[in-house]
Amino acid sequence: FVNCVRLTTVRLSKNVKSLYGTFAGCKKLKKVTLPVALTAIESGMFSGCKALTSISIYKNVKSVDGYAFENSGIKTVRISSANPYLSYKDGMFFSKDKKTLKTVMFTKAKTLTIPEGTEKLAAGCLSSCEYAEKIYLPASLNRVCKYSLGSSAISEFYFEGDCPKFDFMGYKLVDGEF
Picture: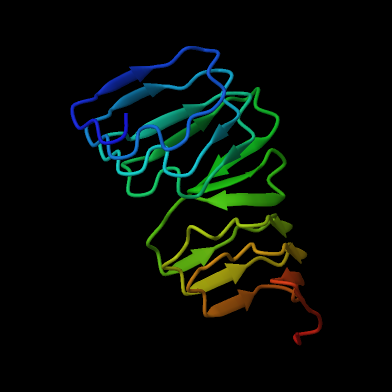
């Protein structure tokens, strides 16, 4: 369905488990009913879907790629309360307990503030923040996983508390030194 510019509504079989970049470029797509069996929302799945403003994510979805909604119209994300894996707030997908930042939706923002209560940045979680130059990290953060920054343009970190343990691109940042 890539680049089906007239496509406006999609309802998929409840048994579909994966979709890869399936609706990229469908500019008029307004409504999608995702299948209950879907386990991941992959990179580019709704990229460029300007008319799509909301999405509901069901209980089996374990991950959402940061580029899944790149340049889309998504403003509202609803995650089923029965989903044991994910929670969502302000363009960020977290673990259910909100302690691990799993991914940030594609953004052109130059500054990003990770909310207090976040304890861990998962691998690749900021890779879709390619315009972000400044990242504000909360006092609660205690671990930044390997590759969590991806290929971003981040040039400044601001720590609200102590410097967390970095396992960054194979190096460890301890007491402010690599």
